[in-house]
Image (cartoon, rainbow, N blue to C red; front, side, top):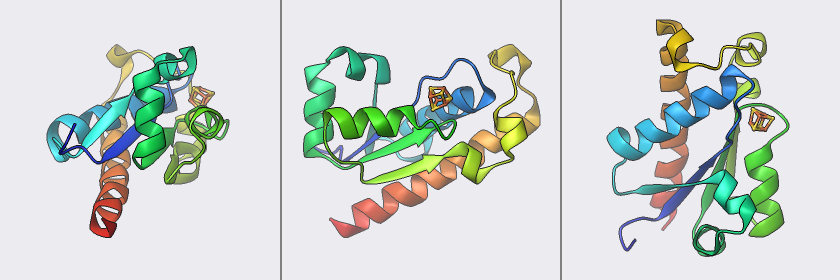
Length: 135
Ligand code: SF4
């Protein structure tokens, strides 16, 4: 935990492509692009009352990454921890019609979807780097 300075809370949407993409992107940031710099917080556990997740969000900057403009991750963070350092909403970043399409299984993903996940991942990295530069 000592090296970890930024939390990324992605929504857990199962209904739209956007939910799948935020999870792919967040995992890529954590495992490949900024290993050791970020932790991901589990939204269902967070909502269910996971003390460790909520404490982390109270004490460290959190970026909420949401698949659509219902902003479930942002809303949960504001409700349970009080502050969101930054947000990414996929329907504002990428083609809304594609993001809200019903492609939800990883088996259905095509190369262009992985390319979209890479755009989201690089957007997360930008925000992580900004936060780390401020500290
Ligand atoms: S933000 Fe949108 S895609 Fe994500 S969990 Fe909420 S409704 Fe689903």
